[in-house]
Amino acid sequence: MTKIKICGITNKQDAINAAGLGVDMLGFVFFKRSKRNVEPKTVRDIVNELPPYIAKVGIFVDEDAKNVIDVAEDCSLDILQFHGSEDAAYCAGFKDSYKVIKAFRIKDKKSLNGINDYDADYYTLDTYSPDMAGGTGICFNWNILTGYEFLKPVILSGGLTPDNVIQAIEIVSPYGVDVSSGVEKLPGKKDLDLMKRFVANVRKI
Image (tube, rainbow, N blue to C red; front, side, top):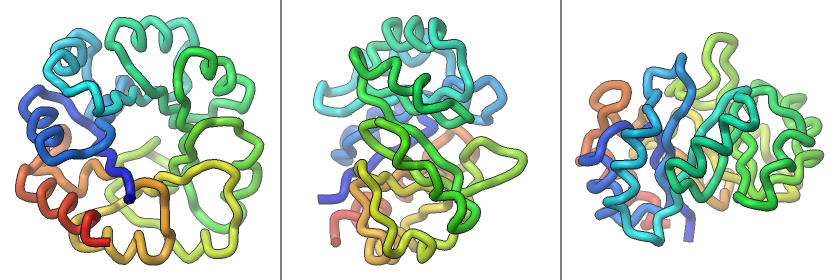
């Protein structure tokens, strides 16, 4: 069954609603320049309300390694997702204590070069933007991935919505799908009906 990650959670009600839909992972963005940035103290309060089977994912962008660990411990995170220009050695440095997701922003076929050099637990494939590290709400050409053999499970991201997620899964056959803006009323505020539709459509496959 395709795993579901809802990213950009900023408040307890959205987290509880998502948990009630049976999603597998919730993502919290610790990147100050993101519209969905959330403070560790808020995440601490949220995770106390979550069932233990939901993985808590912290999203970081080119953050100091010590700060990452401090936040991860403070917020009881399970998985660390690196969404910047972090190199393979940096990402590998956390694997003794946490699962690691390395995100790659896909523009064209050349964007796939070097992905398998990273010994992460999962690869997230997101849409390239010159201005944003993620959360663009725009899809990349999924056919770029055809025939490429990834050494780690792939989580597909970038512009996914309830209306296109079935097609995305049919083309890519990812381990998981990651949605943020596609289930929002506005940045950082999720829409319960959109989340319900997204989850229902993923579960149809």
